[in-house]
Length: 287
Length: 287
Image (cartoon, rainbow over all chains, first blue to last red; front, side, top):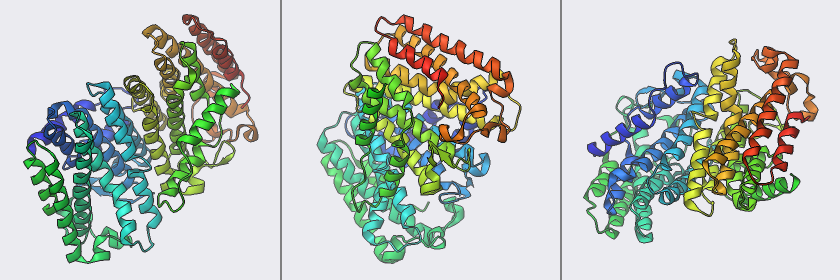
């Protein structure tokens, strides 16, 4: 895990170097770096690298795809934190991008990272395979995926949501990009359809477990440890798994989804111990 | 011109169909359609189609690339009009996206269109060539291109800018995406380096002429005909070509850049009459 994470950090730093002195567009590059290089668990790029390795590829080859997913994730956090969206001041223990650079620059930093993500994915050494992976990213990050999930979230704010709507929302907001990460790793290794579909099941399990766990932490967690404010859903009158199911049933859902992820790994011949551990640790993570 | 434009309209409508009834993410799709299908001159996609044809390709093949450029252009307008940026109420004679759908949904609509642009470009029938074209789009639309230009614009607002800074800004804000449009058309037809470099010179000429003409129209134009408010640069205390050079010298610059565009077409063996006319008409356009 630490090896993967360190390699991702180094690759991100290289893909978005400090702007040259006197560059009149330096500020947006700095704002992009501020958010992209803010640490974080790098869950999505690690999944891309691990699935590439699991499917018989070399994880180093998948690095442009892994970094592309992390750029999309970071752009979505920046835009999500903006005053017109969630209006958050704190992210990963630091002031959010717009708190430091202003709203307009944070908007541009998000746009810049989303665009750079595709530039980066298309650096994959095999252009046709890179194109397929980039298209997977575009589809799952777009209005039928992640952006669609954000839209459902906005549309239901302040309204009572049922479990099915909540699942649709999290399918978009959380699962879609994790699914892109896992599938792109398989694609980097030219894996077959069966592998892709198992990767989607794994992503579904890990993503939903992660999301419900996030709702649990929002109620139970410690703002200092998490690096972001807690109790936000309740404060915003947002329905989440805990408010809908209660603490105990929500925890059971975390376990069931984690089980689904672990079982999906049986479809692969390679050594899946790392991804198994990863699914289990995400379900039990403290922060 | 009308043929190209009608084909672009039909293709955009097909690429972003009305959302199915009951789709919980319908609002963002509607907001995207509202802005994408609002008419407009379709300058950029027409350039893509015409350059493909000029380089011996069939313009119909280049349609995904043409539509991708128009989606990027539309996303940039939506985000540009937001209250934290230019705070515009009127675009193409209609209320801006955030006036109709609210700020948060307009932000998402822009994000959705930028993402859909790459999904669309990567539909090009030859995946490796599509990947090359999509990468050109990402590079020229990104923080070293269009987004960088917006950043320069923000950073210099309220400050005195000189001609060189103004050119850097417009290189990003206006020329970059027009350059992407022209180059992607050439790439669709597998044109060589020489053609690509001539396409860039044409884009530079047309783009700068277009931008300076836009500054002239901001001073001289009629809000009703233009479908947007005039006198905005002066109201915002923004430096532009007219405030820097005066009306007459600004008009001379328009003519010189248009001449550069026309001369760039000499590098091509195909029939360049349409692109010649196009450059001349952009320089003299009333709206």
